[in-house]
Image: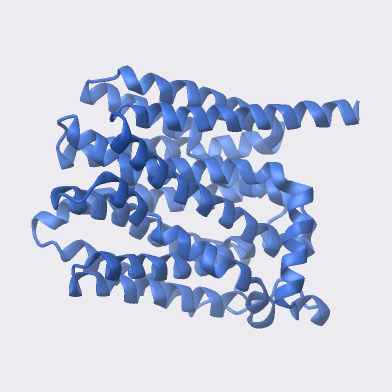
Length: 388
């Protein structure tokens, strides 16, 4: 199959994955809030998906080299579908947390394999563009996901079943792809667990700076989708208004992710990432003083423009810095850093609004973004001095 057709099938698959994640975070967060479950427990529960990512991450590189891209995507997609169909069977905190773990494992399997596949087959001159399109499709799914929360008014189980059916449909498309490997060299394909750990260490030394944007995006994504609905409900917003505000962030991401990706190909990821994170941190702090629904929509739309590309830019940045044979290990580290941020996002913000007051949520996220911007600026200046 030609690279173009392969690329579009992979982006469709990742968009459905984005939809399921975009649905689950606000849907379960709202269900728990309406059931009177505390914001700290609510926030910790949201980390289940990302704990699943961390659990599978150290063990996923060797199977990819051994079996190729396609089987990993097939198994991952199937796990996600099974978990989605299982949610309505039993409302129980522990059972739902286990299902979130399963979704995290499955999602990471399909994301890791598909994004490594896309990166490996992409010309370096258009890497930022292609990774931005890949991220764009995930964002499209993530933008649609919160809107499906409104289907719960028909039946609480309906959103879970609907997203599960979409995953099964995308799963069927994977069978159209011919399996490929990261390299045909047998020595490279047969990688041990210990060998993977060594490769993680090497990639960390080479490209640790590229892990900061995915980490920040993980914080931002889960904080917006898991903790923000709690803050907004307590501020008097309705479920419908909350889904519109969250989707405004995704729309900003969707409209500008590809232009920003193309621009990063021209000027360099290291130059624009510090600026985007700095402006995003300042703007997020300003949200403390926003009260009107319309202003929240505008604010989150602009935040989507500034911060919605952090994951794809970080992934491209890592690919720029990492040799091809280390690319799978680099992709795993990107996913792990994203997951660490995703665990920190709802657990930290959920706890601080329980301990202090709701508006602290915006200040905490702003502080993390500004700290990330400082590290990115410092790295850029150090590289300029070394090269100069």
